[in-house]
Length: 101
Image 1 (cartoon, rainbow, N blue to C red):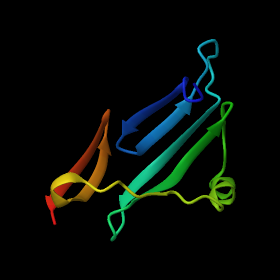
Image 2 (image 1 turned 90 degrees about the vertical axis):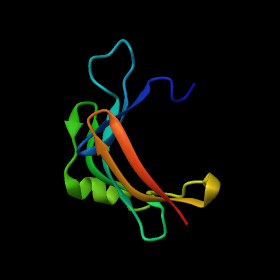
Image 3 (image 1 turned 30 degrees about the horizontal axis):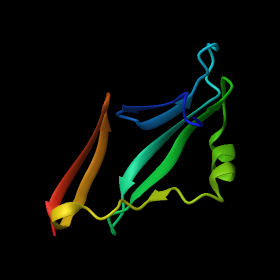
């Protein structure tokens, strides 16, 4: 229920998470993050754009707001000893490549 109006989109820029109520033209918020695979096979999200109620926040403000958050996702163990070897986004797609450990 809390994520009822939250949408995820993918572009060459990264992943964008947007919350927009159906009766509004302006999203409540929108955050775009670059995604990088770390050396220990975790996914690190780096916020590159943050918009609240139509106002784009400066990079310095984003940095301050995100300072207390761990923006790293540890994927659960994958079957067949698979490991993620690369991750990228394209228009409408999240592309992950795997290899057997």
